[in-house]
Amino acid sequence: MKQELLFKPIREWLESQGFNAVVTGIKPNIIVPIADLLPTKVYLVPDVVGVKDNQVAVIEVETSLDKLTEVIGKCMVWKVCATLVYAAYLLEKCQRFRILEALGIGLLGVTSKEVKEIVKIMPENSAGLFKVLELHPLDFSREAGLAHLIKSMLKCL
Image (cartoon, rainbow, N blue to C red; front, side):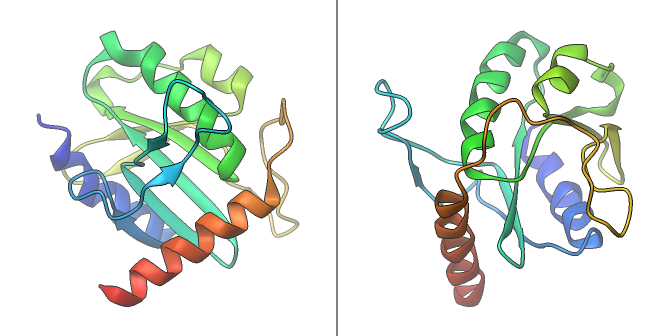
């Protein structure tokens, strides 16, 4: 299955969680500058993003397990910019990658019709408590800027 076929169910799943969501992996509508974080890259383009209030979710989508370390690297950069960060793979390829739990990265198992949160990180109660322990602080001003960018793009669609 092609990576692009996973984008729509992920967007719909994010929307079911209360986020306004958009696919950016096909047409790079959102380019996030990261030169100050990673000197070898000037920017990254997320695959799917969502915003709820000023809280941002970023999902990095991949179909090949051979690229897991690359996906983890991108997710760690996203952790500086977003409250919720997920790696997403075909459901049939998903296992509970323990490293993701240790890093506070969620894992989504995706088919053309459904999304399962294999490694859960969404708040599970009304108090907004997350299931994972953060290993590093989130840059709230960077997240607010990304939230503003996503909201602006959503208005244009």
